[in-house]
Image (cartoon, rainbow, N blue to C red; front, side, top):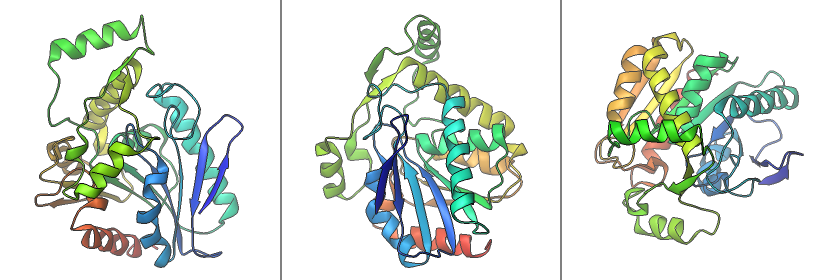
Length: 269
């Protein structure tokens, strides 16, 4: 694993086992976590010739900024544009994919709609489209109003680490990880909710190959949102894992989950 920092304080990671990978994936992680949590997951891809690039979102992991505070999503999309440009320079001619999990899935889907990137395909797992325990409309409206006054005000995300995986060791490691936090700002919540609404409305414009995967037992983000997106996006393939919790890459079906993604990639390279 190679680590380095951009001049703007963004922590970058490269997980690779080959100087000439068959393909490259740019991965966007979820709320409150960091890209370093995907090192073990990336090993499976590396062993099959896939390089993983990733970065810690602003306000997360080893990147700069207050915990849980992020700039508007357009700034994140600029970052993704930059990372994809670097990959294309460093890996000319290599098929490139983009992969988002949870909040990262929301970011990736909205990015596909807003920026129309030139990538071979996109993978989203457990995306934040609809929350399983959705806040009331009154609470959402209040947050959106207050966001204009105190955009960087943070509160607890309320995420229950026990809902991540059936693997208790994974949940315990997450809870004890010093780089994990439970903060979310008013702006970040509003940006995610607005992006989710735009995704539902405009998913039909996502024309590139799209693999959407969700667990039917997800207690954090609702698989119903993934079903809505997949039914609208013309080139989407949807897989719902029975009883799967939020972090499918850390579930007992992990190997099957990986095989599904790898086989889908192979159809496109």
